[in-house]
Amino acid sequence: MKKNKIFPYSLCLAILFIVAGCQKHTSAIEGYTRNDNSFYFKLLALGDGNDHPLPDQVLVVDAVMRTQADSVFWDTKHDAQNGLYIVLSKNELAHSCNPYFLTMVEGDSASFYINPKVFFRNYFDTVVPSFCAKDSLIKMDIKLNQIISKGEYNALKKMMEYRDSEDLELKELKEIDAYVSKNYPSADFDCDGIYMLEKEKTNSQPIVMGNRIKIEYEGFFLDGKAVDNTKQELEFIYGTPDQLIKGLNIVIGTLKKGEFVKIIVPSRLAFGEKGSSNGSIQPYTPLVYNLKIIDIK
Image (cartoon, rainbow, N blue to C red; front, side, top):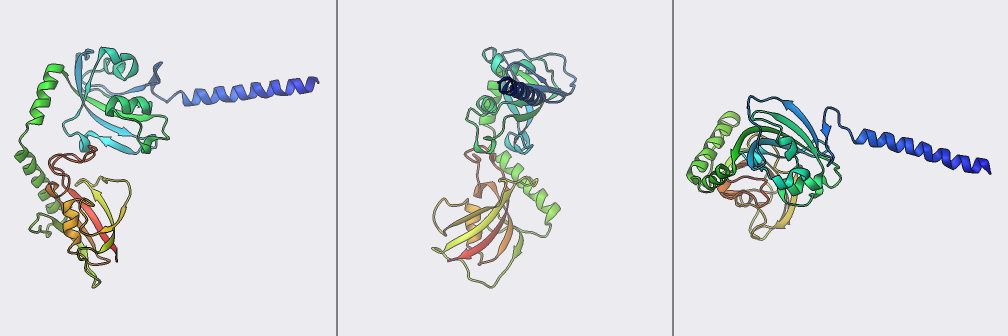
């Protein structure tokens, strides 16, 4: 009888030691400090600023956001070229990174690990997306560029809303020209402004309106970052509205079964002056596409 009582007790002690060890391992990230709300913070570099922000001010930061597998899903370079604006609030100090922000000065760089539910609620006002569903933490690296007042922030927003679209279109054309000159100096654009960078021809069946076609495509920004993480396949009846962006539809109509092209699509034939609906592609963004006609039925 004694053995039957001692064995479960010993087993319980062993389990407790294992669990305690695991909790210690998972609750600490080397080099980071952790607060009571499971926010992890690490100062990466010191800036030359003097003043700390106040709870009613706004931070202008460069930011890179990563999944737990270290895959970048959002960064200011591609998704918010004017920077990420973080509005500090006295009411949110206990449920955000604000206590850490208040210790920083202009020029500081820092890294955070944040619970996904809190992260996406605070920074994107949404629930955790599927690509982060299994993550227990989200990593966010920032550099604090500027501390501004809420009045300055509101004025800046107005100015950005009314900025001259012609300047942005000119900037886009210069970016395309620089990319082509560096990588494909002999390439030229057609009457729609689409650049044909590469083409593999076949003598197969041409595409006509009403054909059911199967295509494979992948999109990139001019700096090489992928729009999606994987190649996309799509089967549809050619001519059906809103299946693809206008630029891809135009090019598909010139191709035959088995042909491959690499093209630049200007923003006016892609996501235009408003960008994509989910914010992943900014306004006036040209895109590079690899496109192949897999089948025609």
